[in-house]
Length: 340
Image (cartoon, rainbow, N blue to C red; front, side, top):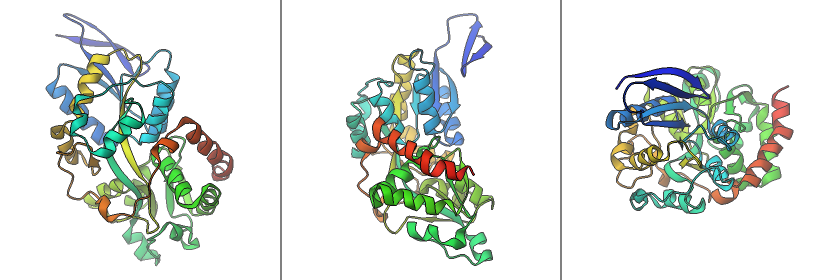
C-alpha cells in the first residue's frame, strides 16, 4: 500500500493513495517526547496502524480535547498527570472503557479508573520533588534544600524554576500538594514567597530540571523521575524528596468521546497496559513506576516506600470545580506577579 500525505489539518494527516484506507490513530502524548516517540515506534512496528502523534503538556492536552469537544480530532490521550484526565472525564470528554488488562494493574491504577467511572486509567506513577545542580550549589556555596521550607531561603533568589500550572500538570500537582500539606491560604502565601526565588515559569513540567542540568538554573521543581532521568544521563543532578511530605501523580490514559478511530484507540489502550510494553520504557529514559504489576520497574526509579507521601485526594483535586478554582487563584495571586 502506498500512502501520500496531502494535508495536515489540526495535527491530523489526511491521506490519499492506492489500496484500502490506512488504519490510523490520532494520539496526544503528555510524557517526555523521547518516551512518546518510543511508544509510537514500538506500536507501529507491531501493528498495521499509523500513529499521528502530537506532544503536549497535560494542561495543553486538556485544553485541546475540550476545544475539540464537538468535533474530536484526537482518539487517545496517553500520559501526563491524572488531574486533567479526571477533569476531562467529569466533563464527559472521554469515553468509558473497562480494559481486560485492569486485572493486571496496580491498585492505584485501578482506583484511578474507578474514580473516573472508567473514563481514564493509571499508566505510571511518580512522586513530586526536585533536582538541583550539585556543581552550581557547591560553586556558589548554597545549602542543598531538603524541605519545602528550605526553598524560601533568600540565598536561592533566581535559582529555581517551576512550570506554569496552566500548561503543566506537574505544577498543578505542586499546588494541590501544598494545599493539602499546609491549607489553601498558607499554600498560596508559600508560592508568593517562592516567587522571589523563581527565575522562570516554564511551559513543560520537566523543563525546570533540564535547565538545571544545563546549568541554566540551580534547581527545578519536578517529578522526581524527571530529575533521575537527568542524573542517569550523567548530569550533576541530585534528587530530593521533601522532608515534610509530598504529593504524587498517577499518569493516566483516556480515550476520547466521539473519537474517529475508536477501534484503533482500543488496540493501543490494551497494548500499552501490558507488562511487556511497560518494561521497555526505561530504555527511553522513563523512570516512573509502571502500572502493570508484572512490569519491571527501572532500577534507578525512586522507591515510593522511602518517600513520605501525602494522602493525595485525586477525586477532589482532579474535579473540574476544584482545579478551576485553584488555577484561577494562581492566576490572580501568583501569575500576575510572576509576569511583572
